[in-house]
Length: 116
Image (cartoon, rainbow, N blue to C red; front, top):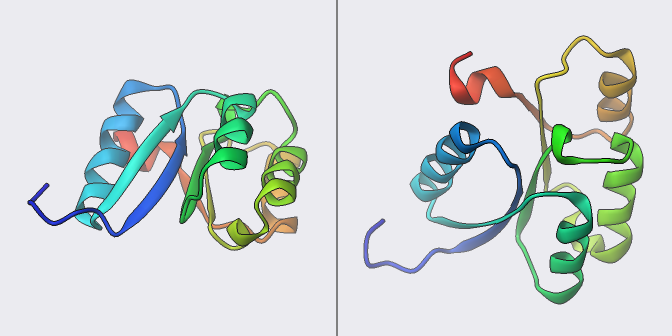
């Protein structure tokens, strides 16, 4: 990234190295700084202590249901409503897709990030 400081701070909840690399490239291209955590408990702790402009959530990193994970993030930091992007490889699960649609979350299928 150039000498210009990042304009936005994004919390990334992801554990797969290939997906993280792709996300870093995308975020850097948008002059964003990514901070990584590996699960919902760590994410909630970070969100309660720091301000983020957006959150990228890989559903595989969540031990909770999609709806509950999103609700907990929004409870702690209401300003993240509409600033949560969900990444999922589980595009056939009706429960996952229903929760994403109910929450009106933007989504990216993981295979688009890592070329699988």
